[in-house]
Amino acid sequence: MKQLNLTEVGNLPSSVKKPTYSLSQVKAGIVHFGAGNFHRAHQAVYCESLLNEGNMEWGITGVSLRSATMRDNLAPQDWLYTLSEIDETTSYQVIGALRDVLVAPEAPSKVINALSSNQTDLVTATITEKGYYLKNGEVDKSHPDITADLASLSAPKTIYGFIAAGCIARAKQHGQPFTVLCCDNMQGGGEILKQGVELILHHHSKEALEWVKQNVAFSASMVDRVTPATNDALIQSVAEELGVKDAAPVSTEPFTQWVIEDNFAGKKPPFDKAGALFVKDIHPYEKVKLRFLNSSHSMLALMGYLAGDDYVHEAISRKDMAVFANAALTKDVLPVTHVPADIDGLDYIAQVFKRFQNKRLPYRVLQVASDSSQKIQQRWFPAIEDAIKSDKSAPYMAFALASWVCFVERAVQGKVISDPQSDNLTKWVEALSTSDNPNASDLQNIKALICIADAPKFSFFQNSDFLREVSTNVNAISVHGIEKALSQFLSL
Ligand code: CS2
Image 1 (cartoon, rainbow, N blue to C red):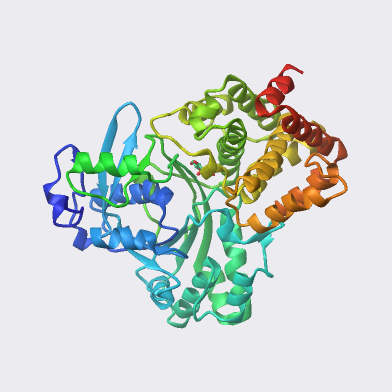
Image 2 (cartoon, protein in one colour):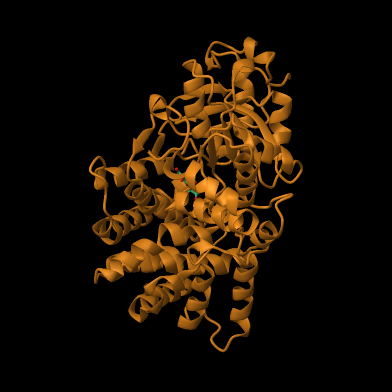
C-alpha cells in the first residue's frame, strides 16, 4: 500500500477532508514543543482551520525534545497525518498545519534558529507536567537538565534553555516581540515558563533578560480534548478509509475546547476565528479543567487499574466508581472551586463523565495513570488544600489519594510504573518490605510517598485527620480490594 504524502493527498476519497490551501504557501509562524498526539488533535486543528480559511501564517514547526519517532513517522509523509474524530460516526481529516518536526537533541541549533527567527510569532508547549521540572511549585534548579542549561546553552536540554537561547539571539538582532504560550494541563503554566526562561537568562545574558521583559509575553491556556495514544486498530481503519498508509494517525473525540489568556506580544494569532476563546483571566478556567476533568480522569484510571480495568470507559461503567467520581467532584471539589460565569459546574461535570464513557475511543488507564506523581499535584492537591483550609474535610479526595498509594505499590510490583519519579517510587515500595511498619497504610510510609509528589508544600501534609483518613482507606483497599473498599466507603 502506498503511503500518505503530498502526491497521494490529491487522490484521497472525497469522504476524507483535506487541506484546501497550497501547502507550499504555508508560513510556520509557530514553534511548538511536544509534537505528540494531543497537540496534533488540538492546537494543530485550530491552525488547520485558519489555513483552510486562507490565513497562511499559522503553520507549525514541531520540536521533539527527546524522541525521534514522530519525525521519523511523519517525514516520509511530508508531515501530513490523519485526524480521526470518533463518536457514533467517524470522520477523517488530513492535517497539513504541521510543516516540520525538529528533533532537539539531534539539531539544537536548528531549534534555536527557528526560535530566533522573526517569522516565529508564537512558541507553544505541550510537554506534559514533567517537562516543566517543578519542585515544590518552582522550577527545580538542582535538576541535572536545568543545571546543564545553566552551565551552557550550546545544546539545551529543557524548553527553558531553548527559549532562552532563542531570546539571546533574537535580542542581539533586535528582533520582533513574540509570545510563549503554555498548552499543558498546568495551573499558572505561563508564569512557570517565564520563571524558567528568566532563571536561565539571568545566568547567561542580562541584556537578553531585559529584552525579554520588554518583548516577550508568557501566557497560559486551558486545553481540552481527549486524545489517546495511537493503536494498530486506528492505523488499520485509517488505511482502509484513505486507501494509503498513515504511520501516525491520531484519534480523538468531537469535543474540543481552547481558552487562551489574552496576553500577547507581537502578532496575535486569530484562534478565536477557529473556535478558541480569549479571556483576560485564565486561572479559573485552568482550575475548572484540572479539578473536574483531569482530577476525575486520574481517579478513574488509578481505581480502574486496581479493579483490573484496561480502559477508562470500563472504570466509569462500574456503578460505584461513577458514583464515587461524581461525589468527589460535587462534594469535595465544587464547593471550594470558583467556576467562571460562562460555565455551569454541574453541567460541566456531567459532560465530562459522558465523554469518558465513549468506548469507541478507548483510553488506557495506564496512559492516564502514567506520571501520576506530577499530575496529582496539579489535579488534586490544590483542591484538597482549599477544602481543608475552608474547614471542610475532603473524604473523597482522601480515598482517591489512597488509591494512588495502592496503585504505586501494585504498579511497581507489576513493573508497569511509568513516572519521572519511578526510581523513588520503586525505592519506596522496596523499603516497605524492610521497614518496621511494612504496610503501605502506615502514616509515615504514606507521608514518605506523598513527599515524592511534592505534598509538603501544601498544609494538608501536616493535617493528621486527613492523613489518617488516607491511611484507613489504604488499609481497606489493601485488605479488601478496591471494589469492596469502595462500596464500604460509599455506604458509610
Ligand atoms: C489525561 C489528559 O492522560 C491524562 O493525564 O487526563 O490527557 C486528558 O485526556 C486531557 O487533558 C483531556 O483534555
